Image (cartoon, rainbow, N blue to C red; front, side, top):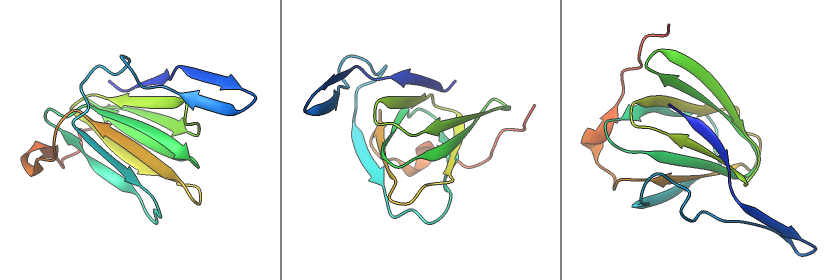
Length: 122
């Protein structure tokens, strides 16, 4: 089930520094980011891949369907990280202009890991 966590962040007169170290429940094997986004993204789940989503700039809504239970999350801070388990069917939408969404994944890209059939809502 999806979980929103706050990343350890150090703030001083120079700005803020958020750290991802020993906080994710998986080893990072793949990193990618979305930008110049013009429509909904996602629309799938995974058999084994865990994900961590961070809005580095801008904001967006993430809708999760976890075994038929729908939850919405709003990512608007680079100190927030949304953790997704495998089988969390997800879409990302309502991107503000200039949004950059960072995604950290527990597995390398594998087309056979994708699930495109959305679970029935409860």
